[in-house]
Amino acid sequence: MVAVISHGVRLAVEAMAGSDPAVLFLPGFASDMRGTKAEFLADWCASRGGGFTRFDYSGHGESGGAFEQGTIGRWTDDARAVLHAMPAARVVLVGSSMGGWIALNLALAAPARIAGLVLLAPAPDFTEDLMWDAMMPDERAMLLRAGVLRVPSAYGPPTPITRTLIEEGRQHLLLRAPIGVGVPVRILHGQRDPDVPWQRSLTLAERLTSEDVRLTLIKDADHRLSRPEDLALLGHLLGGLRSGMTGVMGMESPETA
Image (cartoon, rainbow, N blue to C red; front, side, top):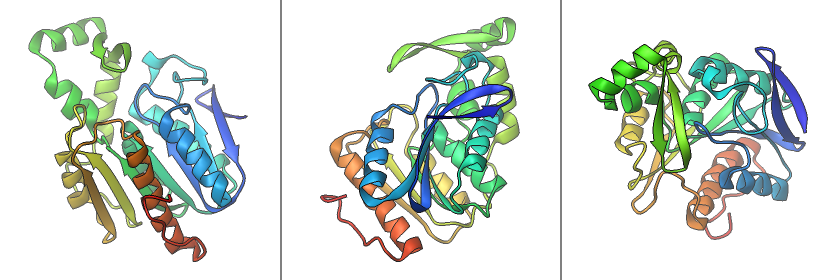
């Protein structure tokens, strides 16, 4: 494990050397680099000799810092610091949920380094559209008064949502205008996703300026996209994307990915 410093905080990073384009995995909100998708990608890249890096945002997992101090901008800065520390000349970003928003931010900020995007149930603008807009008036009042609102989570203890997270997130909204990402983009979204409606990926596909955008919908999949068949499809999409960039790795079927 290596360490990267962002905003004075030590980030936990695991990197595996290999061929370009390397893969950088960007976890979701309140998630970490030890999840099923990250483990799958580590094995997938290792078996193919590809470079792979994963990390925890500040306040997440094994990284330092407090979760409540995090914002979309700060977590984007964390990801940018990790990207800058990678030796690979070209990188494919794999972003899950909030990681999809972070991936888009990175692609806009460092286009020369980014070879392509694979976005899993991407959640750009979720702080505004899926949090703030969904709050009841009394919840908004409590958030504005106390500075934090703890909301139930299906994945663990209640999640603290801070006023700073909501207000700072408005500086990074993307779906209101064209998104000037010109690299190939692959989007995977389950139609039984209770957290991020799959229709938002249709909007994202429309907003992206890249002409090479493909959206795959899985009718019976939820937000996690962590079933064996979901992971196999992830490997298939990543393999196809990466093969077009290296000229070495052939297209793989979902059964063998």
